[in-house]
Picture 1 (tube, rainbow, N blue to C red):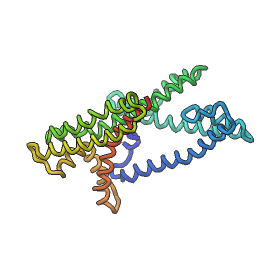
Picture 2: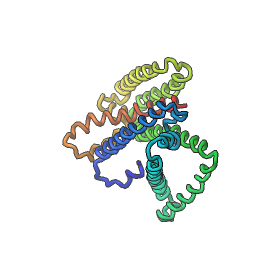
Picture 3: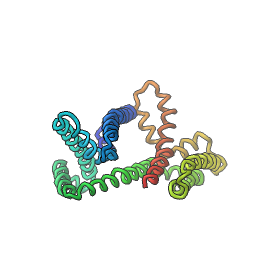
Picture 4: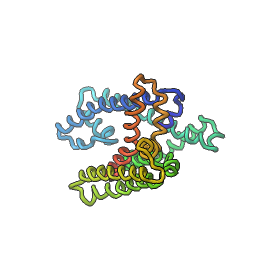
Length: 298
């Protein structure tokens, strides 16, 4: 998505595009859910031994073929399924190759090569490496690789992106303005977030939901402490300055670029309400939610 966004014109409405992509993606997933639940429910009703394959490659290569085998004109539906998976694979290849090509092109080495050469090398290497999945044990290996790449790695990457944009970005400016207030916010947030998730699901799995309450109550305490440290510190920060330069540091400059390109008539809404919602979500809700899900998955 970051690679695709690099092609967007600088004056494009970022918020409108972002909301459109999210709605289209969620709508497609919602529509696809009808076929998935229908097929899995059908297999459960038949007491099929493969009815527990309701996710990942087990759904595509085990559950769907098993259901199609019992349908009228199974060869036709098998052909449709194959074409669907084939086009899905081609689309995924476009996304993966294009994203990688852009990163390589931005490097000193990649600038010497053309886009066609880089794409060709990537496709050849990828095809050679993927042949290991064609052996009789390839299905199990593919399932493992898919699980660890598309669950743990993607979650971890999302967390690190949020940390880079919301906590590392502009951290120097916030520390120069009010060091104690900024450090209180950082250490208070991550000081509890990192160990709490492990305690939730390993030490007290029966009462893991209590961790949600504990974290956000602690977060309120940390926010108040950070504000008081800024208010009674050497700089005597007002609430607005603390809110904009400490509480939302990192994400607010990014949000300002987004709202500046918003062509909405409700500009006051995007300036205030959207700013708080988006900045608070990216900086405080998203790292907590994704990290908790990651530990829960482990």
